Image (cartoon, rainbow, N blue to C red; front, side):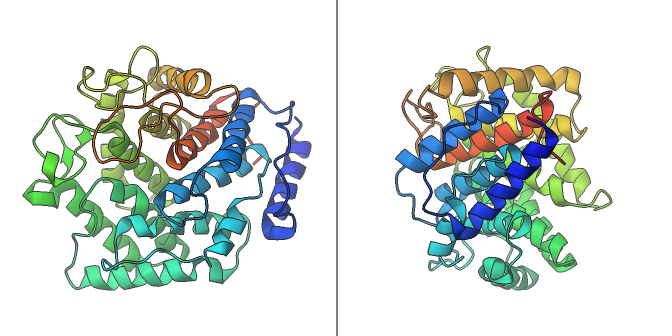
Length: 367
């Protein structure tokens, strides 16, 4: 596909996601898309047509819609689902008795993507802005323990980084760093990041154990990937994020399975040792970004990405577009099934595809 045609396709997709054609059904996968893009479209279409609990603005759907907008930006093809989903939820975040529970902030990242890339309308991120501003104020009063499990990094940290940069708010970025530092080094007086292994424990209950959950580490690498994409090159926080990112990548390279997947339990191949897609997709996403950004050496890490994408796109992805081998919702290593799928697994696959496309000749989206 020529750059001009792809650019027109992107423009059309953006127009369609504005709500003018929200009742449209998914079109057939365009034959002239590159293979990576075709597989992304197939996976996205399957989920929006067959997925479950599609209306919720919880973290599972938020993860899918962040991937879904990456799909539009990469392929120029839209399934016209993200903006209607966000509108139906009134661009609101979930609430609970814990006012700053990170899972409830995850939808804000999808709203930010809509605002940034398609519809720069202030109401789209108004609720997110208020939630983050209130949390920043709380952190400034000394409350720094909100991100006390590793998933929290992906659920909240990217929005802090993006709003901090967007609004030129040092206070937001300082609060982000304070919260990250607690996750990394403060939980239970030790922190969730194991310097010895270069991996993250899921929460305080696992500190000191040999249990390193694949998807939990995927959440961490995904968060760092997203934050590094938006922080200015001269931001003083970048050095620590890059250090942790590279240390993770070194270990992940060493423990990748020969078939390209990563085990659900990263350091124990005998515990749920079959394929697992959600962690594999997040790792492929992060490592591919590291190559694209010049953080990781291409000669050393491109084979890791190639194996990961091959596993995802030829074994996990079925001919009908179902992405299988996704471990169900949990907080520790667990089993997966060939037909086990979930919104967050598909979203992670689409994010991986976005970065893999940039590494694939003839497949990169137009500038």
